[in-house]
Every structure is written in structure tokens, then in C-alpha cells.
Image (cartoon, rainbow, N blue to C red; front, side):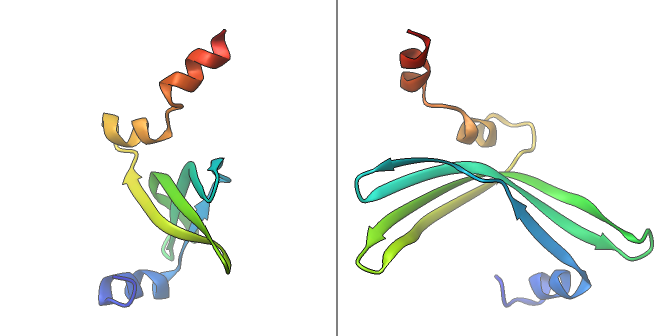
Length: 100
């Protein structure tokens, strides 16, 4: 996907991704993080960048002898459907514990 014509044309026309710092939960040699990503694109006619996409991201890392490595990244557009919003929700058991 990264090397394909569609992605390469976007890169050459000016774009970038801005990621928020994820909320990370470490569990031994595994960790999960959740955050947002903004995909910005350059608009030469208007002389400005515009937000093309906002997404929820779930990252999963594993600790290896070489350090932490990405095992999985799930990226879902925040398009007003429940699935992507749920990716950013705090697990119900933690919400209950913090309320006590």
C-alpha cells in the first residue's frame, strides 16, 4: 500500500500524519495504546493544509530482546459509527473501579 501509486501521489502532493500521544497500558511484555491520528493534506490552490481524516488507533506492542516492537496497529476512521468510537473507550471494568 505504501509503495503504490495512490499513496505515493498523496505523499508527493504534500501530506502528513499527526498522532496524539497514546494512552498506554503495560501488561508484562505486552502493551496496548489508544489514541487519535490526523491525516493532513496540502491544498495548493488554497495555500493551506486541511484535515482529510481523523481516526482512532489501537497499538499493540511486544517486548523483544531488541526492545519494544509494534505487533499490530488498528486504524479506524472516526465516521460517526460506534466501532471506531469504542476503540477509544475506557474498558468498563476500569471505569467501575475508578468510580468506587
